[in-house]
Length: 294
Image: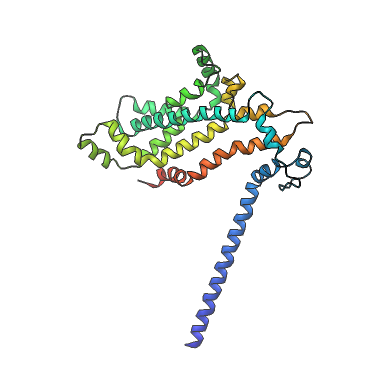
């Protein structure tokens, strides 16, 4: 019995050692891969505190002679406006677009998921077709339309399509999420006398919150990174968002201080990172719930 107990103890100790070695190897590999993937971002932050000569002297991220001149001079820009003006313009573009997307796509998705109406399959097929259609194909017709409406050099071409569920991806995403939700509570609300709009606001939207947060987060990041849309429709510097302001700040001369553009790049990606990590739990839930429920 003693020999058997000793053998069991040895086997248990061996299993623990193997489990510890496996866990150590797994986390070491994850740390190495994570560091390799994050290194460009780490280098960007470090290089924003370097001098021009030090940036091109090596690939290390730690500045030998840290300086904040890149942030000071980059914020001032070479235009009559500071970078704060461009951040404000980005805010003026992002907020109406996010709000319009959330409202219009929710209404459109609710109609497709819960109601039967003539040509429903044709309209939903059109949504899928638009989803598969490259954006570049619609650029010229959209530009001509907005030009004829007199909307060029305004924020309207960037706002209006989102206010009318122009982002087919979000409509499709919300439709799939709604189809995974049981309609029992909605039917109970209608029995109690609630109309379709009340049912949507008080029953469906709270259950739809994770998916809506994902929609808003996607739209926020895509709009923050959008370069081509503002470049096509905006011509006044005082209306530029940060994506165009960064390009405006680049000077191809040898004397250009690259730490300025790197510093402003750090400030530009900071809001998107903060919003993403703040809403990460809801974002993951909204992405995964449609495939798990039902």
